[in-house]
Length: 77
Figure 1 (cartoon, helix red, strand yellow):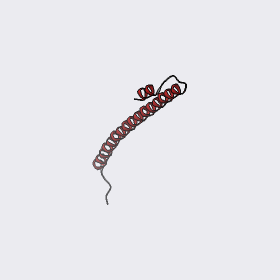
Figure 2 (cartoon, one colour):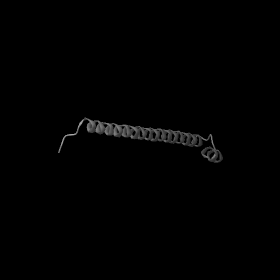
Figure 3 (cartoon, helix red, strand yellow):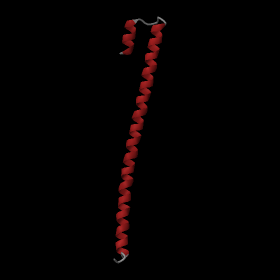
């Protein structure tokens, strides 16, 4: 087996550079997808906490007699 010449080495380097560029593009896509998932998860958690706080507030008002059953149903809708 003979060692590759300068031209062959140059072609190998170009092919590797192309592969690195493709992988960097895929990495950026994955990072963007992870950021989207993270943002959606944060929104869901925020909405769950807000809804739980809202429901807890409604039930507290019911307990102290500030709301009746009709108000609770309207509040939970």
